[in-house]
Length: 468
Image 1 (cartoon, one colour):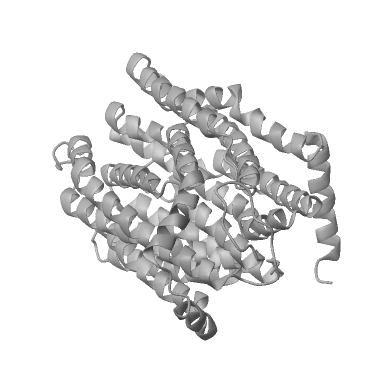
Image 2: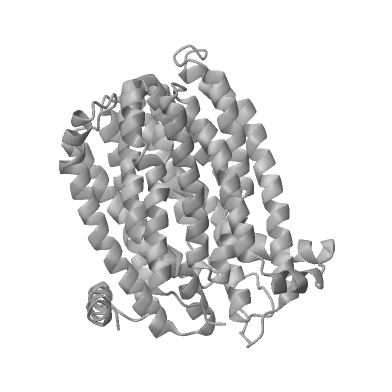
């Protein structure tokens, strides 16, 4: 079954992503105005820690999504590396095994994350809030947030199931309902005077709404009956897990390297910079994350189809789709960065924000660094559609260098946020920024300029034929 992406899928992707980032963007002006600088800083530090424990996912989410796409494309077995030949039928026993393994894996991941946050995470928050004194109800806020991360992690695999099946529109509807629920709760509690508790309580309750909707969309009556007839024994699940673990462990280590590259700076900032500087750095990262999410939405919608095209061996169609999605990313990202640099600072003053963005030099540098990072990450993701992970060592090396460099620049210099941005950019520029685009262009026997040309021509064609 070839997975296709309709205009409706794309439209729902943007609507859902609007509310996805809106859970931060729509509530952000109120949060920045109603919360103290210390509360804002604590919020960003909590997000940073939850991102660390999110690494316990160890690459399973994209692995499940990609392999479920293979199953619906007609593969009859999952291989450790590479893709088996496709047929015209869906192996329901294999699908049942994938679902069983997903449930098993995420139940354990979520539990380990919760224990880690309630122990080591609590100690870190204790330090950065000066024995929980800087923010009212800091300990209670942290405990509620820890449980919210537990449920968010446990429910991750539902998104992988929907995307893997090609239910793009449905997955976005589930995301939309979850985010709207979260926004409503956040606003209600903020105006009730609950402070930062509003954000963490919202984060705890909202995932349940998304889970309920995801179950309804994925499990049709016929599929339930088919899966019930294909009970998978524990031994089969473990064999399937071992196959998935072969690449997941590699991708998990890549994620650790990626975290060190993109997020560890905030962890060190919490230890060496003032909470005001942490709030400023965190605000910049949050707004850039929103820009990246919006810019990548079009491409994200097409990943299941691109995985299906890779499984079928249609490399020409795969490159056309990928080049098109990258062209859309470039345009939207550049527009977003221009808004961040020139519009966001005066807008924050207008709303009376208690946190401000860094200076224009830092904003420009961070925009360039993030553009190059997202670019090479997209090319690396295309390599992943072939069920191969060739960038493990480079990711770990880059992550280690950035980790050491970030500590050194904060401990030995007064460059602050600018130093963190420059360390990340220079290390990535030395290898990853150019390596993975080069590998993809070499595989498809095109130059990077030819790649850009394909993306431009595909964009023009889509515009001309839109609505036909």
